[in-house]
Every structure is written in structure tokens, then in C-alpha cells.
Image (cartoon, rainbow, N blue to C red):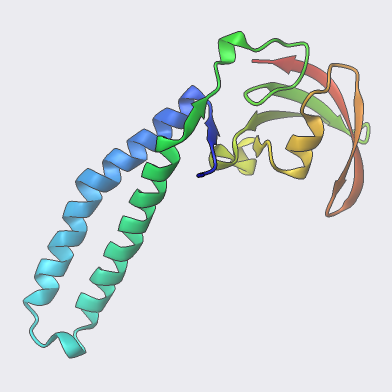
Amino acid sequence: MAKQTVLTKEGLQKLQNELDELKGVKRKEVAEKIKVALGYGDLSENSEYDEAKNEQAILEARIADLEAMLKNVKVIDESALTNEQIHIGSTVMVSIDGGKAMKLKIVGSSEADPIMGCISDESAVGAGLLGHSVGDVVAIDVPAGTKHYEVLEISK
């Protein structure tokens, strides 16, 4: 059985938009590149053709991945979440080892973007924070060693 993909409403919309873009615009662009490359003649020595076919294979693989994810998706109903405990979809304010406060959003693995503060529920920090409440101090093993995360605030 395929792994269930957990997404927020925004994450679902983002994946659907990407799929639409790939199926519509990108497929046409790659098809045009292949058509142009075919016009260059001998396919055995045609690097443009090989490159376009490789691009097409990567594109089709991404489309297949997105379609598989979207077939087995579970959308988190953020309105049903409480601020009592950390869940997927929660936005939390934490202090790491008593330092500066940091805002994190716990999301499914396919939406994770650490640079934007969206961390996966499957990551060490995300999994460690799930189920905890305001005031809890959680010791989490990360590559830099064990860090202590104090939960300061939970919101949707």
C-alpha cells in the first residue's frame, strides 16, 4: 500500500498547482524541444535530442510522483486542531537551549521547507515536538548534539 501523504490545505493547493503547470506548460515546452531537436538530423549524434528526452523523463517522473501523492492524500483540517498540543499543522514558538525564540510550522514531509520554517513531522525536531504543550521542555537529538526545545506558544 502506498504511503499516505499528509498535507495542509495550502500544501495540497501548491502540489495541485505544480501538477497543473507540469502537465500543461512544461509538457508542451519539452515536446517542442524534442520536435526542434529532431529537425537537426541524425539522432545517434544529436545531443539536443538526448537532453530533451532526459528532460522529458524527469518531467514525467515528477508528474507520476505528484499523482501518486495526490491519490493517497490526507488533508489536515486545521480548524479542528486545538492549541493545547502540537499537531501537524501547528505553528509553534520555541526557544532552543534558552536562546532566541524561533517560529516553526509542523507539516507533512512533502511540504517541508526548513528555510521557510516549515519542518517535517518526520524530522527529529518535528517528531520530538509532536504532542507536547506550552511550557514543556523537550530534549531532542540533532546532528549538533542534544538540544532542549522549550515550547513557548502554539497556534494554528
